[in-house]
Length: 358
Image (cartoon, rainbow, N blue to C red; front, side):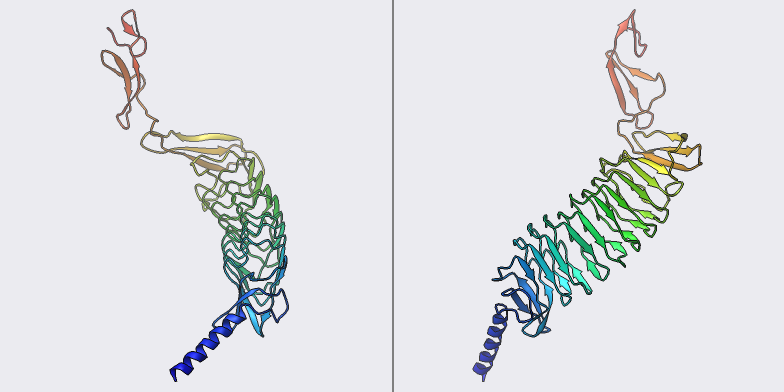
């Protein structure tokens, strides 16, 4: 009896293996490697023996639906286009990673999930669409050659890292229903300008860091701008804020480089350059931060800038030189450390710097 059961199980295994090499029966490219899922559906495991440059994923295989493309299935292959039917609900992590000849993707989306870096480093890919009824993991088109992006009606967010390091992308107009630009969305990209609609309330951390952004208009609808959203943007000249001052709900480092320095871009409030006056100033010292408070003489907007603690920013009382027979120094009133050492220079028996007599 055991031999009969083992024979049946072995036969089933062989049948399953045969599925992975059998020609597609539901239309599409032939000889893709398929794998049978536990629910008796199929997923594309790899390109298999298929020699097509323009790959069409079949909607069915041996009468059962094809529901997924597995992780890394086509990674690094020289395909030029891919058509994905709406039966596919998941495009796996790195599924098309590094397909540097891939120029076109046609996804018939229906609640499809795009995996981590699914189309990353596809440098020949020039135009993509962001779909409303799809979900996106991080860095889906990161490092790709994308130049044009179409946001489908109903898209409510720009996914995290979706165009990070996409150096060819220059200009983006996101959909009027978008409420959030997620973390790292355009970090390191070639984006020079973007139109942010009044529906957007959130700009994620590092969203535009190290991009080629030249100017940005942030509407009054934006209530949150997160850490280093515009850090390291060397070409950023102007940041125009719709409000009369920076909202308190924005991160204190929203316009700071990762080094802690302010970005060099000029900030415009209400579309005008502030006629600035300093209303309070406390210098940074060796033991604590400093603070400068500003006010615009024209619109009365107020804002402040934190000056980071500087270990070398010692302070002493004016003329409070200390000395010995060979040199003089100042002593910090905060940390009591000594600084500004110098050798005596006597003239007429008196040191020209500290006043010590021989």
